[in-house]
Amino acid sequence: DLLGALNKQNVFVSVRGDSLRVTPHLYNDESDIAQFLKALLPFTDQR
Image 1: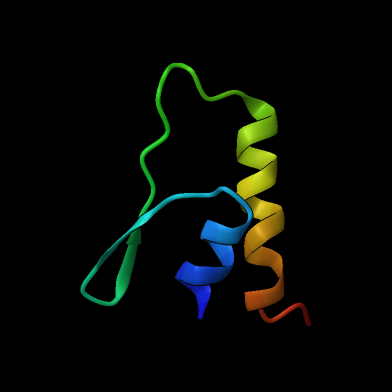
Image 2: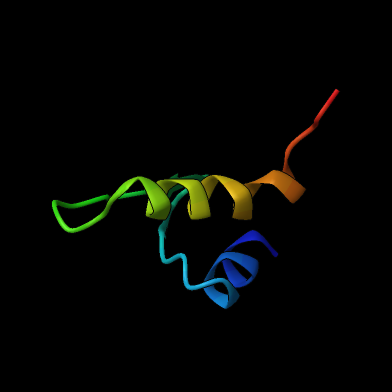
């Protein structure tokens, strides 16, 4: 599942209904955002 896969990659988000809640903060930088997007890639339709 998506949440489990993200957690394994040290990407922590919350599930709210059928949505993900992503809450970056001041201490997050570009590499954190890149890590998040890379972790999501296997769950996207890459046509």
